[in-house]
Length: 421
Image (cartoon, rainbow, N blue to C red):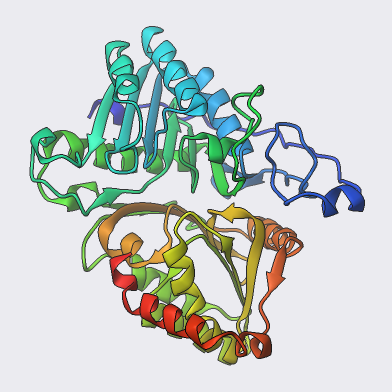
């Protein structure tokens, strides 16, 4: 197909980003999030890139810097841009991306965009029309209104993936949508910033391994233009050396997503570090975490104290006592909306992408994750977890057991309905 035939450079490089450490006084006054380009408010020193065995280079990004790098990469594109996103907002950040994509399309770059109809339901339709008229090849995933559909109407099944591919050798994957809350003022420097600061992560991938993410995008693209079974959009692959893989799951009851997560947790021998925006898993995944803690592994969960979906937070809290009683450490990230979705096994295997630990991700959404095996990168992820701990409250079992009775009842009731979330 047209978008799948591109040349891959032999030896790419990504220059490391250097941020000076901050004073303790500055750190105490911040929320631990990079909301302004060049700010030093979070105490996080961005790590150097990591080179895999086949020459693929991966770079860890935090918060709005991920969208800043994506914007710059699109601006420099010469051949092709493929963007798949759940929310494409029409706020100043979204319009900046939309206009840039229009400019690239007018320059002759092939620009492909998939956006989710429900995720972008509040966005200005005129922005998308402007993109189409400028030459952007645009597909709306599963239109929310039945009269807009060309194929079967599937309003429950959504495309929750966040994926970028550029010029045959650059890819990006993570939890960030296109919008101001994810970017802070990294894209629009004059903006005062959103009311709520959001904490998120992404991985930049340059080199041979990026081609797998183009193939994942191509599967989604073919599904949106041809319809048929949703498994048309499913894709999985890994590098020959096995140190980078992609799992692009689809909305099916027998998705490989949950078995893979259970296998990874069951294989842990030292530690499990989980940072999760929406934590409302089924009993099997909770059991895997408890089993790991009972095997004397260090199991640590970073969950939100603030969220855009309060019911999911209630569902997550219904598991705290069970988890902590088994030895799991539970933290709630303070001051920001935690939107990151990462899993680190034994400081070596990292899973990052769009997947939440809830029924919607596993059974109702199209999702994508990168699975990266590298002790260096895994160590960077654990360091990032420790940085979040500095801005988190550790939940203590004794204190938690003294919470009000009505709180317990509400959490239990919400947890029973978590399969609907």
